Length: 221
Image (cartoon, rainbow, N blue to C red; front, side, top):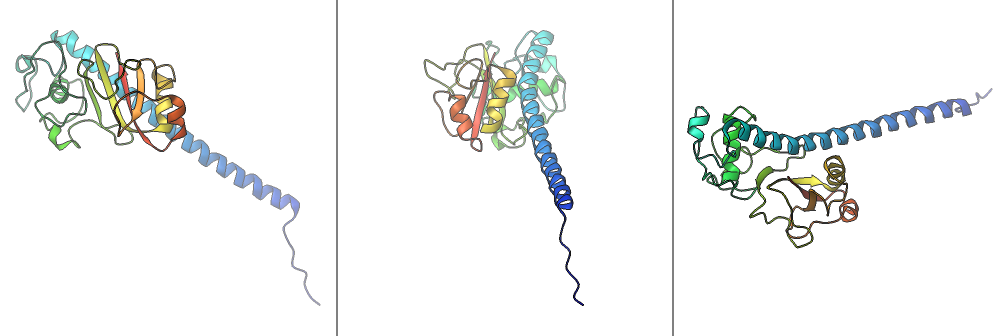
């Protein structure tokens, strides 16, 4: 007598589908939490640099990087590099020149105990001295005067200083703008542009259409 091979019952299939649904939901939720944590981390980078500037100014009455008497203000195992003390953080935010004040900025805030990191100036290496964001992109600061990454009459950045962070995926760039500003990457104090480009900031619609492309996000203050 042949045995009949039993299949899954509808109840068993329903249970399996529910379990698969729960697992997929957990994976998606977990990825959402990871993405949210990345955006929060990036937003904190922008806020921290403002704290470094204001904290250094409050303590020494001069800008970090621009401090011409830095050796009298901070102590460390390495000689601190002097700035010009003209009220401007000179040099591009992503400089690879050790002599630029936008590079020396990091030495000054670190020697002052405001920020962690190495204090031997080495922006020429462009990979270990300057801080990086959660996606590995470079973070930097400079004065708005001389800023060339985002230009154009309709998109000129206002304020005294500008912080930029590059290599940020499009799916994070608009979230970051929403967290820090108005959610529109072509207006306000936070703007975005394709990392490989310079010129006018792009709209959130453009950024959202290319979620996997890298953007540079800049915030003026």
